[in-house]
Amino acid sequence: MSGDLSKPRKVNNGIVAAVCLAFFTGMIGMAYAAVPLYKMFCQVTGYGGTTQRAEKQYAGRVLDRDITIRFDANTNGIPWQFEPVARSVTIKIGETAQAHYSATNKFDRPITGRASFNVQPEMAGAYFNKVECFCFTDTTLKPGETLDMPVVFYVDPDIVNVPELKDLKTITLSYTMFPVEKKQPVASSAPAAGSSNKVPDSEASLGG
Image 1 (cartoon, rainbow, N blue to C red):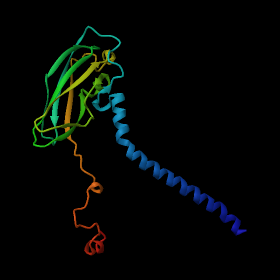
Image 2 (image 1 turned 180 degrees about the vertical axis):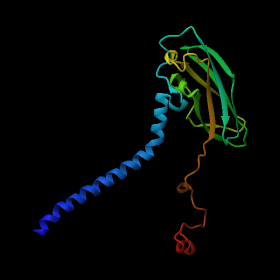
Image 3 (image 1 turned 90 degrees about the horizontal axis):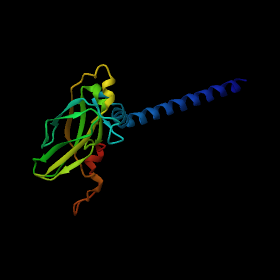
Image 4 (image 1 turned 180 degrees about the horizontal axis):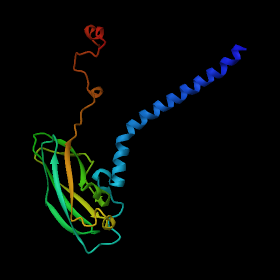
């Protein structure tokens, strides 16, 4: 009789273990996906001042109302001169415009950089649509090389329907350029002549 009662308990323990394993595996997968999913969420919604990627080049209408777009550039740990060609441009709301940034490598070897961006005020990010942009793209410049980096954008006319933004006169588009280090994988390095891949006894004894 006691043997029959133990079977449901064993089955229940197996179900609990399977559920815990599935939950643990799912949490690991979500951790790896969090960054790209957050970036996608920001680009679609404009959350956190992130500009949206435009699906079409022109807005449905252009309003007879001006708005000034200011351009800002920063570097973080990269030896580049990075700056907007023009500090600002005044356009009509809904009008597609193009701005240019310039990057020059001031170092004595090729350097790869990648830009992130945001929009101020943050709420305006949902209405600032990019048609073309160099952000999140790895760019390598040779020593002394200069590159023109265009940005094509427009401000969604629906911005005037938002009470907090209806009187907005200026939007700031800011980029920050970071270095991207492309390191050669250790496995691809061939051993020097006469050398051995064998781990010395001293390292092996340390668990190295």
